[in-house]
Picture 1 (cartoon, rainbow, N blue to C red):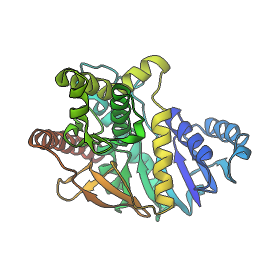
Picture 2: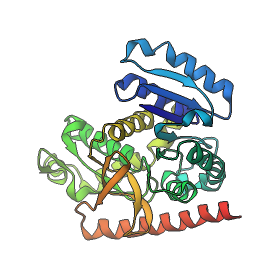
Picture 3: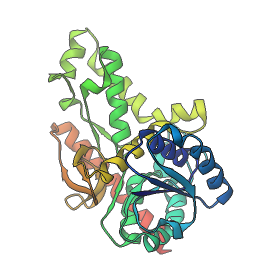
Length: 316
């Protein structure tokens, strides 16, 4: 099975490496970048690591090499550092990159759709949710989803696990809505072993309000903290992207907080999504209290306005 990655900057390269390391889910990885020399270099580097994993062929190519790809991962565009989206006081967050990356997608997506008309399209570029809605229109089909809030949910689990001194995999916690500053952390349903997280934190004598404030701040701005240290947030999202590719190729029907277009809300956002062959097959709303539901409504409004702006950029 063939997987293609469009854009082999920091995130695209990390995604390709994670695909090689996970192994077994695909046999062929094609890397495409407007800088063909970069794509050649990354492909060559990864080929030398490939013998350590199950059989996989990594190569660079052009859009014509996307034929028969089962899934195309799109990471092309300006990243947060290059696009100036690293100001914690800016409520736009990743949405600051929207206009720039909408123009990139207006060029890239039609070429992808023409070369691989049956492929599932995974949008990774920031801001992924409005860009996924734009991709739906440009590609002319519904096999589109974004990484959504899976990375945010993982960060939520890690932050809670650190405070409770348990394994992150034993924490059940979701983030829904936008992958951005309006995202909604579902504290009311967060549990460890069936025990509410609030109860466990309260039993430690911690101030719940202070813990919540600290955790939410760390998660909402985790990307900026990473960028300040390394220059790019790449390894976590690369691993997430590879995991989502795997779920599609294996038709897993995995339930994950990834984003797809919701007919109910009229935008692409993250809920509890069932992911398999063809992309997101079902979307369900997790349990929320009134405060969280109000926050989700605000997040939807942010996404709706962003999607309208993305469409306007392409129409101009």
